[in-house]
Amino acid sequence: MSGICGVFCPRHPELANREILDMMLDAIGHRGPAARRFFSDETNGLGLGHVFAPVSQMPGEPQWHEDENHVALLDGALFNAQDFLPPQWRQHYKNRDTAAALEHLKQNPSDFPEKLDGNFGLAIWDKNERRLRIVRDALGGKPLYWCHLVEKGAVIFASELKGILVHPAVKRSVSREALTAYLTFGYIPAPLSIFENVYKVFHGEIVEMDSDARVMKRQFWHFPPYRPAPGDLQTFAAALREQVIQAVRRHAGSAERLGIFLSGGIDSTIVLAILNMLGVPTHTITLGFRTNPEKKHLDSDLYWAERSAQRFGSVHHAISIEPNHDPNLLLPRILRQFDEPMLTPNAYSKYFLSETARNAGLHLCLTGCNAGVTFERMTQKSVEKARQKAGAGVSVDELVMINRTKLFSLEEQSELLVAPPPNARQSALSIVKRYGQDVEGEDLSDLIYGISMRMQGTEKSVTVLDRTAVLNGVEVRHPFYDTPLIQFANTIPARFKGSESEDMLKAVLRLAFEDILPAEISEREPTGYPSYYWTQGEVEHLKQYLLSPGGLKRTGLLRPDTVQQILEADKASKKKSAGKRTWGLLVLQAWYELYVNNNDDFFITRDY
Image (cartoon, rainbow, N blue to C red; front, side, top):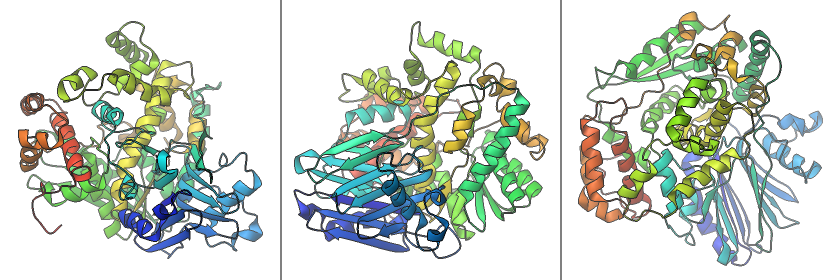
């Protein structure tokens, strides 16, 4: 577990001094409280920093490598480091991953970093060329932000946005495009960040800056096209089995024992079964809500996960959030951690998963995250229904935008915002197009799920788990969100994933592990991760402070009359998602108070 940051400002070296770098490292220090490393080149206006904590039971070294020509720092892990280091070299390097990345650069500078496989954010300083390179892995498994101050000729980067925001040269001006993205999708997809001139490095992208302050970006990885290969279900299942086993092996690495966030569903149970087969001691961790007796689905995972844990002999930890639970004890820490607004209330509950892992002495956990978008498909009937609802002649990108609108429609936003942007539709659609331009295939359900995987899989699902886990010193990896596995999965026909019948949802995955997957788990109806929006008055004081006319006036984003209508509608709603829109507004207001107004008065005074 680690974090990286740095500044390259050849025109104004004082903007890369040690004091500023210390502030940046303090801001991301929770990502690696065990050790810090620095590199400073005052002549060239460069400062680099790294924070680190080991993810295995043995003490480790920061992922940092320095020689006479380069400095390299890495957040995350490479899964194919051995491909770049000859056997006789492997014991020579304390930090194989960073050394391997450098070897790739030296051996194939024109192709760098195409051959790197893993979850990582990477920075390399070339001392001779005076060139900074920052890289985010193909699937965006690790976060990486950067800021380009054109007028100063500076690039600032960090694993989390807060690491950039503490730099005195960075202004906190809210991006209207990003605000539209949040209110539409419930999160902010790359390359946007919530602030203007600050960006997420796109998945599979390298950003370079030279000593003349010229910035160049290049997409080094492209999403593999959906090209169904010939074969029957049994043939694909047999090949998929080996692919999934190898993915779990890659993500588990050399850890002596692991945690698994276990729902008792197909995906996480398969990960557990494989680790059991590989002989890796495991702890399983499950969470359920018992806050509302009428909503039994909120705690169903507890029963099924316990059954899976017993079947495969894991040390099991069950967490139950009871009716008298007070979220105000933890919410301040969670809300502060998210330096961009994020709709999902799961951020709160997922903190408990990693906290339990930490208390069990675990530093690395695996999940079944993102298996659904890889091995499930909408039926043709559902796709056609969605197209009819969207209107005749809509493009795939427009269909995805409508399908993935999770908070407010564009029409609703025009009534909600004090200053609605004039081009909101084009703005939201351009985001989807950015993700869709690489997704190729003949089956419409493949295209819809491919775009959704790239957008939501990384910038929501993976991000929430990363941000909450690092607060507890835990690294989380996702074997189903794996580059070689997705490459293979995109050759499996959509009909084996459910495009022709709902009975075939995940059919190829079920068949691949039918010998070890308990029938009751395989046949279990999916319920989704339990989401609870605190609708029983638990956060009433936050609503009053943040969503009152006075609170709305402090931020100046939202119209009080429209907000009041939303609050009343949510309170009267009996839907499963009741409270979601209220929660989305509360999160936005809390974020603005914390990161723009620099105000945390709305938290009840406690010793957090």
